[in-house]
Image (cartoon, rainbow, N blue to C red; front, side, top):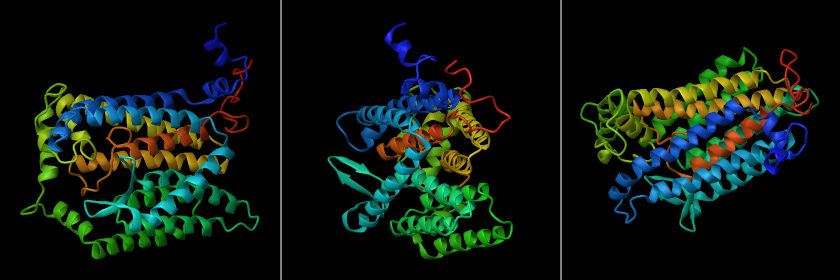
Length: 389
């Protein structure tokens, strides 16, 4: 037996072997496919984006995306190998760190496009809210589970405190898209944790009131909604070019690097990478991409619902909802089905914070859905039966 076979052998209880034989290979493969597609599409969009920004290197964004992809793969592996307790601890420290950095953004942050969401250092920009999202979902799931034990821990109160703290700092930036996203994921986690029916009208009314307040108090959010509802006479250049790019792709696209509409699409390598992919690779590729995201979410939720531990079940499901909902919002914007929000397509859009945070998210989700003794309901086979036979 060579060294590689020894490391992943069913009969040897090495950490790597334990991880390999307990992680969900289908979810791992879907994650790898998305990361690979993100690198592929970065080479498609990088030259046009570099020209628009007058950069000397036409592959500037592609090279950086390759580095981010390597980092994301590392995070997926390192985080998914953690125990449930390790994931809880990691979420706690990441949440605290992200909150502290977000609180400092008004004083130390880098402003772009009217928002202060990033902190710059050594030529890179970091968006702490991207890392906040998975950490928040894990923590609120933990608190919901503790509250259900009836041992005096005010889990629901703490969970709402964690959520409102995050929302307050996001609104200050302002970042409406991320606020909506974590609200949906938080609501999904609360629902799966067993929210009382009497709370549903209250939560629905609160969400509607929050959206109304955002519309009335934040001019940029109001203008985006107004442009979406009444595009006549409004500046819709961004979404118009994206729609034209998607339409011009046809069934099989114009070919790699042959897209022309992408040259007029602002933020083509980030928010509108889906339209670039649709023009150059066509409808078939676009549907396949949607299919990978759909598989990731459906398979992830299925695995989550099979877990017997309340914390693992709610946390894992919340993380998969987070990824799926972000993908849905990004593609809806590209297809002009929702107002523009400045939200990346997970693993596909260019960006270090987005790519690494998604690696962290999927690492946590894969770690929570790994097969462990007693982790699954009795309807499933013994998690490690045969793994070390």
